[in-house]
Length: 135
Image: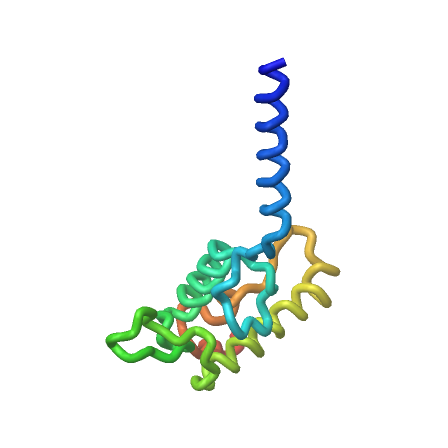
């Protein structure tokens, strides 16, 4: 009888803990991300960092190319949500363009699993180099 009482108390405590946990609002992985307009709202921190690094490498830039620096005494180096730099607007337009090209064209003719990325055109430069056609 005593072990039944102990098991009952443990069971009730577990039920209470589960109820409390369910009552709390779920916290998404990207609660710290603000002003995402092109990237998916459910992107994880690691996916966002990987995407940003890929863009920076493809253009041969660093974060400050698109993002506004905060004051030196600020906790964060950059104000990632700010739209003050025109380069950020251009980057969003280019991401939309690449997404549309991949979805509307590349996937229809692509037999090799290739996709258009920033590097496809930029190759480490902020402005893609234009090559003259062969003569």
